[in-house]
Length: 246
Image (cartoon, rainbow, N blue to C red; front, top):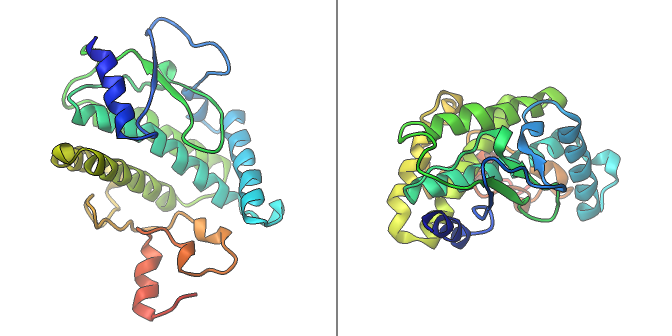
């Protein structure tokens, strides 16, 4: 079936694109959980931030109390949105639409990699050519972002910068895995960047994209050296101009 081919083609793009699927009228059994619980300042989102904060402490060797809640919250939001952006962007490039409405989208609360995601069985009936980008930003990405900010005081500029970086990373991965789809991937990313929520980003998506904010991950590296910065971090520009490596 064509929908099975789509799932296979998405998986071939990388782990952030891979999805399970379920019939639209069937609810996956636990430990699958509804993504809708992450679209508000919920206990599920708070617990996820706490778990990631503990994992960050274990990975860095820092005491848990020294892991800033806003850095952990940024990491959770970034990781979840990278997971939620990649499959619909990839499917749009492949000529399909995924139903990403949170009330029919399921995830499993696991750490150590992209969280498992299950989507309603793909079909041609959901949305149209001009719908997928608006629906993704308005119905999924914005609620998760707002819910995160309501739980932990993280700058909206940081969180929406995470969204932009996740979109760009997804398009970059498509272009790397399928050079024949590169042009379509960058067009899809540009559609998302054109949404009002991302109007503060100064650069368009592309291989040289540099976000206009920092994800705060550098706060977890005591040395503060160059390795503390992501490749597309705005702080990399200021440090390069100053000649600083600290």
